[in-house]
Image (spheres, rainbow, N blue to C red):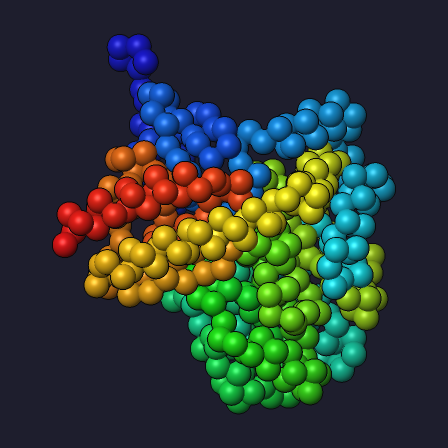
Length: 399
């Protein structure tokens, strides 16, 4: 950087809204599970773009598909059919519970579509009375006005009143609370199978099955938000596969594009008539470019042993985290499945995150005290060992 020039960080602070508490590094390159800053310092990435880069940074799978499709067709809008979009929809349907797919640009948009579909279906089937969606405390569904209104975290909602009406909140892992909240105006229950932003909270045994049973008995739709935990993150293509339960509607995003912006809302055939022409749309939803990449991502997850690798590395990582818990009394709990793992501390975790950054490791803290690990699904055992050894050293100093 020449004398008198303005740094990237200074320019960002000058020209961009300060909506993010960014770390003081500028990342310029990535490969596999590593990224490099503009000074050439490498970091092992255990954030993965917040559960996005499932196949790693600069994945050859992604690069090849992106380059090939960019030479063919990038965008034409949804006024026309395109082959990559249809092929991706077919892949998702053939490997899920669903019959229909709607493409958007993000997880928040996919969740917006899910909320709209639930309300429209309720209106079509039972008149104007049903519109309320029951959501969970500590949930996170997005930052648009509707998904913000569906998010059960006061700190996220603060300052944006009046929020949209039509949402109720109950504790996660409490089916009785859902049952008590159901009345004549409730149309759906919306749940993350594992709460990510809420602190990597895994449901109790039988909970999701009980929720499914309740929804069936009361004529409610069950919506699973798998934006963070879907697409292989837990070691299965979709997190709900671990629990033997299928929803009526599911949302996906993040890892579906491995870094390109895409969201998807999947649903069963019985809901399809409620989303006819003119009911919902997206100019950029499912462009040929992004769906071509997503096809390559899905095929790699299914065919290249990524899911099995995720399960093996997740088990190993969890075992090593349990070793830390046995060693340090201020570690409260280890949680998670596959490669979405949380280490809950009895103190705030920001100090640990910053110490890891200094030593060349990117990790994340949610709910102030839960260290969250979301590495690329291709992470290797020696890379996990390096992070755990780093954490061990930090915890020794904290004692």
